[in-house]
Length: 306
Image (cartoon, rainbow, N blue to C red; front, side):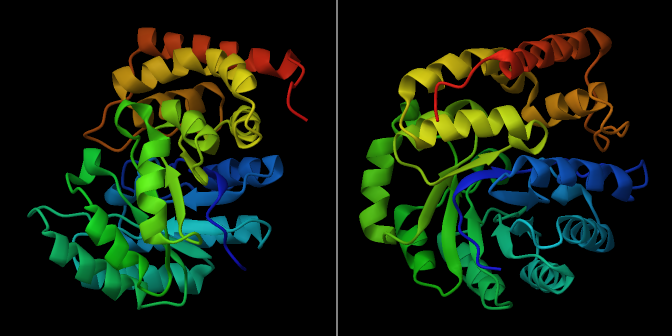
């Protein structure tokens, strides 16, 4: 399947038990919701998908489960980040064999990587399969910052076709895109994560919203994304008002904990985050429930964007 890194890339949870065994039934339920909603791509084993907490065998089980559920209806992007290059290469090969259509790679490390070390790590993984690869630039978790020069070098490597960027400083996405695009090339996709800023990023010219909430609530997320893609800033502002309470919780608790709470409240899974990450308390879950009720009001609103 040809993969375009564009639109809404929805990243579901990977529910697992206390021993780290993937709950395939719950994962299939989450993935099927995304396919039914017509998201542009399904992003498996991203940060929301707990990739760093799962063994190689369980990551393979997750990919096999998702691929079997999707059955080629949507492109499947799989995260393959690992501490060692050989492990990331093995995960990439596993993902390809199990039915992934593209890869997502973060520069995971304990000893901080140099720019040169990151380059060779990405080059090795990119050359290990025939799948297109997206650079996962997530300094809040990896503590690694890609220089513009490193991104340019990586863009010359066959199969590396996209970058998943953190939110731009002061939400000035256009300036960042205008700086990067001439150097990375018109065919190189630039997208963003950090849900509360991604509609603005797309309005300002970004290709992709790599979405946490899209992995759980694809329908309202797609509505917001499509308004941004159409350039309807008034509609984006109107819809964003319904998401704002959720964005506030994401910023307070981290999206990972909040989405687990929301998935439980929606009876999509009863699994909890892997320890030592703790689930939200009762009063905070009540706040999540209020945000879900607010978002449900969107179902009754007519769309202002064709």
